[in-house]
Length: 174
Image 1 (cartoon, one colour):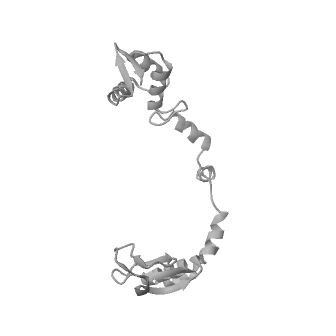
Image 2: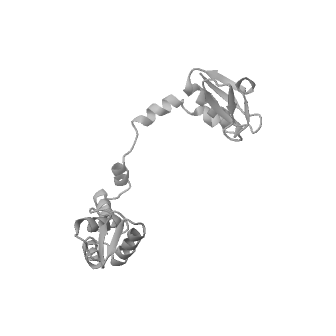
Image 3: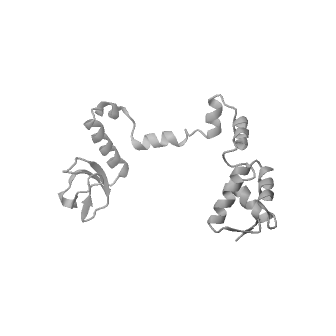
């Protein structure tokens, strides 16, 4: 069962599913017994309860006539089910070349690349290279488009967090 109820403290309207002993207003937090709440409608149909609440809110704001012209929730939902536009279709309809956009995303030095994010590349260098020096990690990451200053900061952070150890200028994952 669904009930559209109102709060006597702040005039909020909401829908309660089922029936509990007490209810709490989601806006102001006032708590009252279910029997003491003003129930505008009680129904077995959740869509009907939503429509009643929406109609009441529209009337409060002076848009009751406009709301009356709309289709029901179930009708609107069935209209939307088949009308979803995917990202590629939207971009093409906007006059953009999807392949060109994907290529630009792969070239973006700020984000992930096809070989991983900057952090992932530094971490992979530490895993793949045998006790590398900072210069070796910088060279490995540099070949994959990661700037040296980023590698230096990343190594320092990893060392401070205890994820890598540094001994004699050589790094090792822990």
